[in-house]
Image (tube, rainbow over all chains, first blue to last red; front, side):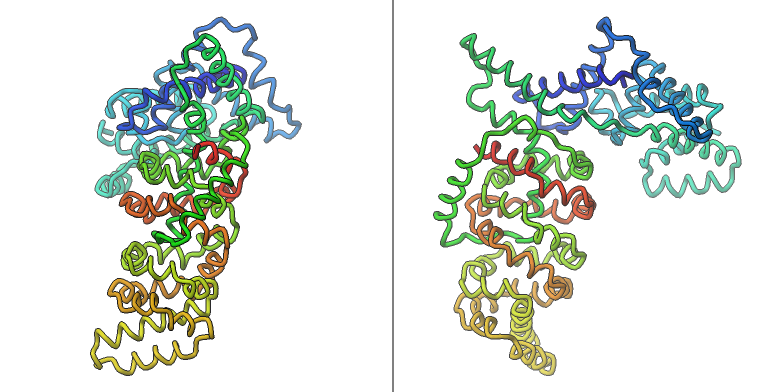
Amino acid sequence: MLGNEEDARDAAQNTFVKVFENLRSYDPRHRFFSWIYRILMNECLNVRRRPSLLQTHSSFEDVIARPADADLVENAERRSAVKKAILELPQTYREVIVLRHFAALSYEEMGEAIGIPLKTVKSRLYSARQLLAGRLGAWM
Amino acid sequence: MTERDEVLLHAAIDGELTSDERVELERLLARSEEARGRFESLQRLAGIVEELGSVAPPADFSRAVANVVWNRKTAIRMGGFNPEGGRFMARKALIGLAAAAAVVLVVFAITGYPPVGKDTQGTIGQAQRYQAAQPQLAAKDVKLGDTAAQQFMQTDVFDRLIKDEASRKLLGDAAVRQMLADPALIAALKDPAVSQALKNEALRNFLSSEAAQRILQSDAASRLLSDDASARALIAAAKSQAIGRDAAGRDAAKADAAARDAAKADAASRDGARDEAIRTALQDRMVADAVRNDLTQRAVQSGALAAALKVDAMRQALNSYAMQHAVATGMLQQALTSNAFDRALNANGFAAALNSAQFANALDAAGR
């Protein structure tokens, strides 16, 4: 979601702190997880807005090992390309991809977490995948 | 390709198809090469995206979060205003409690719906002493870690469970938590025979009946339940009586066979059969329905159930105050039969989570 482990850690920590501090405002008519995800998404936005003291290029590409084997190199390059493509998606598209493919939320849960209607969830997923497919054509 | 076709293909990738839509998709794929190509392309895309996987949180992450929460709380108190009040610790423990809420199903899975025990007061006292002896929730205790438990937490079953007051109280009970940590209990719940039996309505009705409570309260029942041969004999005895009563002689041969089974039982079962509470219970219609059910019998004969019932901690939990209050919760009965619970139960990671100190400690804090 953020493309940087440090930022992800900050967002996750802030999220849990806010959850602890705002439990009283939790509306039990909604799923607890959806509520947490919604807070998390807002925190991700906050983290992305702030000026970063670290250069983000120190994240994924530098962290992964430099494998010697050709297949491993290709795998690493593909993963890097996928990650880059996801990070380049507009925020609204990126979040539906993350919630669907990494958090495995249903359409309904995604709608609750992001605060959008079911129909919008579907259309965003469609658009997000169109963009991703366009950028990752060489790897598919 | 129409817009509707696209919707179908995406829903298929996301596992969101209804049964009618699944048929519609199959027809689409059968008739359209373009749709097949598009579908394969979407599958490849999903594959390479999900290949990235998730990143495990740093080892000290939970501690760091708890420290931040604690520091903020302290700062607020020093300012003379604490909006969270005395409930703070309980709230802090909610994440741990949430994960552990899944565990409450285990209790109900194995015990059904427990009795109002004559030793309740003693058990409560013991539970309170146990709780008092436990350390406060530490930062590491809010770490969930286990994938199976986390997945279960995302289900509707879990969601309803965590909102249920009775299950919250149950999770706060020390005797119950002790029981949950026992490997024998977990092994029993993973036994397919036990799992099947617990989905049997007749058994659930029986377990929630006064008859079951009378049985479980009796000393003889304690001996019976701790021995699988005895448990089988108990069922045979009940079956014999039930058949004899219902068929009124029509199935005399079957009744005789069951009676012979009962007669072969060991000394413990004969003691049990002499117990007034058990004799009375065996006359109960619900008992008869439950014990005549094949699923129940298979569960008892699997040996897994008997192994779990031998756990001392479990017997204590059966008599706990919190158990009694959780008995009447219809939601828990629904949860028991859910597929989500089944999946969680059969995941190795879930069993590991049940055994973790984090679960026990988090629940301790929640019980305060």
